[in-house]
Length: 626
Image (cartoon, rainbow, N blue to C red):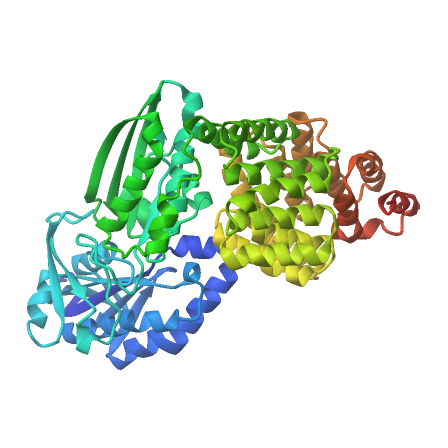
């Protein structure tokens, strides 16, 4: 009996993939899924149907669509990509949904509603080469279209792609002219253009290749400064520090990394510091093709470090053909200090603050003070000094007056009145003193100057949490998570706020997300007691007693004298129903806590189940004392 043969037919395949899907889902899974459902219902699916296409496979973040005509497939792709900017108009940029699209035509294997074969695989590989918002197609598609449509194609030559035996001859569609020029122009990865769609860039952590491993703070600092400088360029979309630093120390498949981050370009490099000399290498890479757009090595005196950073920033902007406005150029060229030793102390302080212990705050404060001795006009160092003082007073009960803290912040503002970080520092200080109108004014000013300032968003959320306004608190924590997608703190508070608002299922979901992010953060900084506390809190919310107790024990092992650990341990035991343990810890904590921390206790939902306990009234008297 002859073997049954599969049916075959010639068809055009369009592969479409959501750019940065993992990042969008990590930031807010429910919102992303709802936005995709709405997009499909209102735009994507109707557009495909209008061009006689059929979605035959959905892959979570992507789609495979069959067309009977190459012309229909290409028109559909152009309409989808040209229409997406309008769909994103009222959406914050870091929440934009964008597609990459690949198109190929060939002989398909058909089994029922399923389609298989090399042609499908080739369409998927072409999609991976496309820029976000762009269309890549094969030479077969280009030949079929000919002059039938008013479309410009850009010849990219042959590209070797995974699991395809022979290189593909690839073309990009120029959407600026497609179908009468109604769409947005999409940058071609190999020849970047200024465009309505901002080029997206991730600055990967520069590798420390100095003989001294402790110089890593220096390479990290250069990475952060490049992120800060490029973020000042309105024509670029630059990923945050927290997002890119999750890739620190990992072997990189750059194409895969760009795809995972949803960016068109990557910047990577290395730093070698030896005595008074520094060598910095930097390269700009197309994410889709792993092609080096630009690379340079700088061998300079350490005193030239700021000039090198400016040169790298300007070169990246030039290579991406982005217009640099005069005030942006001035902001980039305005180095925070010209004193390299002051800069070095400042970078060390920034690194040590992230350890999160009482001792690390004391050490960071000393480093910021040393930076200011070397350069009394270093505004960011005053901000760092003030924030350390606020944290030491609030979390650890240090005898530092609010007047001292505000005087330090005022010095920063005298140097740079438009420094958003300084206004956020004022907000933090006013929070410590429960000066509510001034808190709001300071944080609002910081966010007016920089709507993406994480410290302002996060601590504004904490302020509203402390006064029991959980709805307002939630909005700022959610926004902080959008600004820094890998943020552990805001997602943990989001879980707690949702629990207070009675949204238990959502609270549990965010607790799971928080645990995942905390695990990543702990791999980078295992000696951070704050991360251990948050692990314990989230496990307690989920009712996982043993894990919660193990992590709070770990936090005490890291820093047994940390009063903030005592408070969070009391939260954990309250959530686990061990009220006497919780009160024992709170009795010690309240004697050391600053006023704002004591007021925080009054509205903390973790203690709601303890308010009928006989010991609560006695503790309340201590909390409410002047």
